[in-house]
Image 1: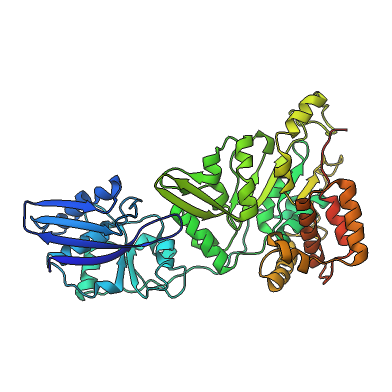
Image 2: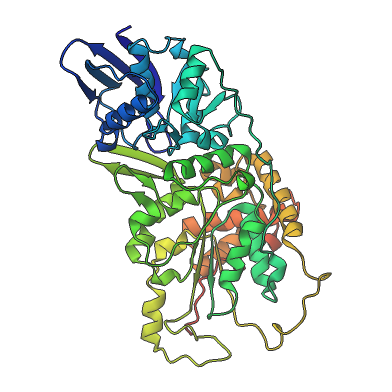
Amino acid sequence: MPLAIVFSRANCGIEAPEVIIEVHISKGLPSLSIVGLPEAAVKESKDRVRSALMNLDFEFPPRRITINLAPADLPKKDGGRFDLAIAIGILVASGQIANSELDKYEFAGELALNGSLRSFNGALPFALANQNKQRSIIIPYSNASEAALPKNINVLPANNLMEVCAHLNGSSLILPYKSSRKEINEEYELDIADIKGQEHAKRVLEISAAGGHSLLMLGPPGTGKTMLASRLPTILPFMTEKEAIETAAIYSVSGKKFVAERWLQRPFRNPHHTASSVALVGGSSPPRPGEISLAHNGILFLDELPEFSRTVLEALREPLESGFVSISRAAYQAKFPANFQLIGAMNPCPCGNLGSNNKPCHCSPEQIHRYQNRISGPFLDRIDLHIEVPALPKGVLSQPRNENATETSLVVRERCTKARKIQLERANKPNSALIGPEIDHFCSLSKENRTFLENASEKLRLSARSFHRLLKVSRTIADLDSEEKIQEKHLSEALRYRRKISFIH
């Protein structure tokens, strides 16, 4: 059979469009050409495939070989993921293995020169795209645990090309991979009980976790801002299977290591303040996900917030509202989800000592004003909760930890999970994601409470966006209290976390 058709998939963001690999062997001078917009690494497949076949005692046909990667207008990137499919196509077209129902399989994997299979990026999107195709996927064994995450996927893992050929010939079948993933892992090295004092900050952290709200903490160095942020993941509700697969798919295409034992735990990303816009938002060619997408369904913690470039911070405004980011290049576009919780921390002034009980601040009012105004008003407007984290009173740190009086992360997470369950049953989304008519419907107020909120908003000069965010925070506080209606006490507490914070007097 001089023509063989093999199925594989390309990598386009977190999508995996189908690629049909056509291999034709004809008379003519010995040559191998690959057409269909392959990048350099894909063109190099011919050398890897030739060496692999010869080292496994297969014949590399001394004829004219043409390989078409269809559709022709789709750029074929991401290295050697097509190696296995090309090798199978050559073997079938040259009659060295049987054409054993190739339309029932999809192939992906990079070939080593000795014929062994190496992992490739994007195994999870590759598997997800197969859910509606009813095909088995043959991939390297090192990708199997990741590809087997979705249900109803028949994953056939192989260590080398010989195992794949034996399976197709029917002489030695590859057994389907059985996932041994853990459904949940509740173990964290950190615990919110480690934090002494700062009870009001812990309360705000609980509200943030329950409703998925963004948070800004302002205070002198050493007051526990970073410590608080690092404990937030320990009280967040665990991800649903759908959310976990979405997040794992982003890590899959980014080349980050997949850890099956912690796949339901929410990610926590803490980029340095020297990070560029591309590092945070994503980019390069082909486009790769940035920190905001790697924090999808999790936490993006920006410590020393004013030290980030203003351009970088302004680039976060749109993803904070839309929940995704689109990256466009001249010949390539990719869309990555970026539904993250933003947690920011900043000092009150350049030296950090304004408001501190230990050291005096020597910054002038102009320096303080310039420092705090590195963060624009529209950016601050998109943050739901604003709190001050002051220095602890003398003697608090030296007090021993009271195991009975201090709540652990497990206890707080139970409350947050209960509140989040209420939100999902009510609107199928956390309160922070409510929009337009949903806010009017689920955050309705009595006439008295509406008057109270309008008067407070006028006094604090809140924008329409701030007004709606305050309503959503109030709804979360009511959910934590298991209240069906938002009460005045919920609005009053939310207002305390919405006032513009500043140490400038």
